[in-house]
Length: 205
Image (tube, rainbow, N blue to C red):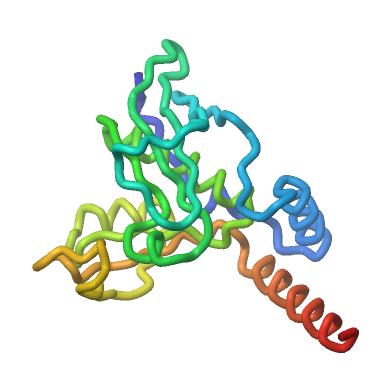
């Protein structure tokens, strides 16, 4: 089902032009896609081999993070068989800081998992997420190599506080990797726009 076709870097796939015209057009299109920041209105997303269908009701039996998130059924694109579930956490809060933005359950090989992570990161990008966190236990060389193959870069080593539900004795020192989904110039432009808006509102009050 899955060939050995070489996958391009996710970072390269998400890249955009750096000219002023491309920058303006990109920001405009992204704002049009997200009427409300982080709100996912589409009911399904299609990748090469999967269909991600947004679930209307969240399962009460599985762990659910405190911050806003969306859960999807992962279906085989051809047979429509449900293969597992995927969660995408929205925003930058405690759950995504210690546990990462993407949670996948089900039996997927590395190629399949790459496709899922790529698809979810693309969804995050299209809903104005500036970056996606990936987290693993310190010293996990396999996951480190995988995250870097997606284009994610090491950010820092973090210690989970004992009062956090992410704390696991002997496994509470984590490494955090970040995949930037929006071009740095876009981020700077958005920050500058927000700053100017705040200054304008302050003067008006």
